[in-house]
Every structure is written in C-alpha cells, then in structure tokens.
Length: 386
Image 1 (spheres, helix red, strand yellow):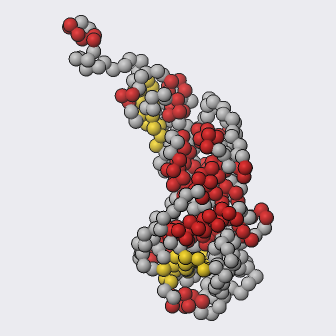
Image 2 (spheres, rainbow, N blue to C red; image 1 turned 135 degrees about the horizontal axis):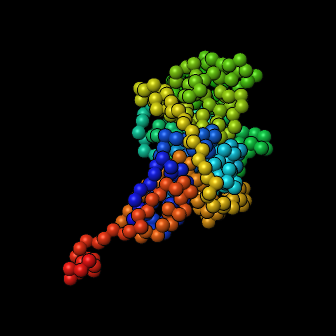
C-alpha cells in the first residue's frame, strides 16, 4: 500500500498519475503558486489546469477552463506569439510544451460549438464601441454575465485589426465571423456601419439617453486624432486608464486595446477587454471596480527535473492545429508546475511500486506489505491457522 506522499518534495509533475495503471492518484492543480507559462501569458490562461484536464481526456472541461480567460482561443492560436512557451519548465529537459498547438486544437473545437441565448440577469445596458479584439472580448464576458450588450462598429464586419490590419495581425475571416455569430446567439446586438464619434462633445450623453449605463471604448488607435471628449489622455494621445480595471477618468467609461495602449497585441487587447467587463460588472452592482481583481502572482520555484523521461514535442498541422491524438500526447508532456499529487483511491493500490520508482522527486513511499483482508475473508485465518 502507499504509505505517504512527501508534499514538500513533490514537484507536481504528474508522473505518478501517468504511471499508475489502477488510477490511484490525482493532481491538485489549484495552487497559490503560478506556473511559469501562466505568469508569462497576457491573458493569464491556466494551462496547468487545462493540460491536467486533457491528460484525463476531459476535452470540454479543458475548453471551458480556457474560455474563462480567453474568449476566442481559435483566434489566439493564430495571432498570439505565445510568450508562454519560452519559460515552460519542460524547456530545461527537452523542449517546451506546444501550448500554441493545444490552444489551436481547443479553438477549433470551440468555433464548432453552437451556443444558446444567455439568460438576461441584469437590466443595465452596456455599449461597446468597436468590434476589434478588445471590444469583442468585453462584449463576450458582459453578455456571458447576463448584461444586455450592444456593439457599435464603424465597418461592415467585426474584427478590427484582425480583419483590416497589417498582414501579420490578421486572422481567418471565417473564424471571426463564427465568433461574431456566437456572440449574437448569446444575445449581443451588433450595429454595423454605425460609427460613434467619442470626440464629439455630447457623445456620452447621447448614449446615456439611449439607456446605456456603461461604455467600453475600443475604437483602435486614437493617437494623432482629436482626444475623446471628456476623457483624460496620456502624453502620447492614448486614453488614460487604470492599469487593473481599464477605467478612464469618467467612472462609467472604460477603454481597452489600442485606444488605451500604444503597443497592444490582439491577445493583450482581449485581456484588457475582459478586465473592463469584470470592472463594469462590479460598478453596475455597486462595488468598487477592482473588487476581486487585485491578485498577486507568486511564481513556482524551479525543481530538479533532470531525471524525468524526455518526450518528443508534437508539432501542429495546418495553421498549427494539433490533431486530437497529438494534442492529448502533448498535454501529457506538461509538468503541471505547482501542482501537488494526492492519493485519491488508496484501496485500489496493488503495491506494484511503479509510482515510487518513477517519481523523480522520491516523494512517494510504498509499504511492501498489502493490508490483510478482514478475518472472515482471509484464508490465512480459516480454521484458526494464521
């Protein structure tokens, strides 16, 4: 039987989970220590939890986990530079986990889903000006939270720079259309070819007259243009915002993406849109805008992984998308940094010692003797003989 796991020595690599043929172990991936990949991700995607779920073939749960911080994984698989891969602990052993390929795999699964309308849980309407990465992200999380959302877009289609920008910024138009369609299915309303000019004197009052109680300004780069009326701007001309909440100098107006940053990648814009959506939800419910958002990151300490088995990295196919088998194999390569192993089903242990032998940290102790069965089941006690 397994006697114990030394939690101090355990590095959370999951070798015991992957080795045990009788499924005795589980990984606790919820930790106050942040994995290196998550710390480097602009959206703070929890790849530790995502890969742990994929290791159990729980595909939909892995996708749901990703969607908590990344509304459009199929787009991120295309336009993100994936800085998460560089600090991956696996890189010290063989090569980084193909996080981009896994995200693209889940993204392909995501765009194929059909979504139902989200129940309306709030009465206050929110206006999103601009249907680029930041605006679509804010609209997604606000709609998902049950707010009535209207997206005003100057162009005839959604996407912003991901559709009309430089070639390196563009994403697949079909994927953009699919996500816009999903947003509409959830209940968001689009107003295309409907430019709202935030540099007009009474633009905010006009929106308030239409019943909108909060605004997300995601109009792209505003530098060199007339400053948005009523909003404080930086020396470079961008809208000045709170770094945590994206709130402007006007309490009910939030700015995200290029409107508030001189250098904003599409994924950074999506992350800012999510921040704005969370902060709007807070103020519309009477709370401070940053409630629940001021979370400090504590990085996982590096552990010795030199004794782990080296595994070949799976590369993606078309557009970097990993097929199902390769995505699951690649998830197994993840060391789930910061996790801790636990004995979930001790009665199933058959004392094969595989977990103890394969544990690179020497954290598992297996007792060589199997426990006795109750007296009436054990033949050693039949007839009074031991």
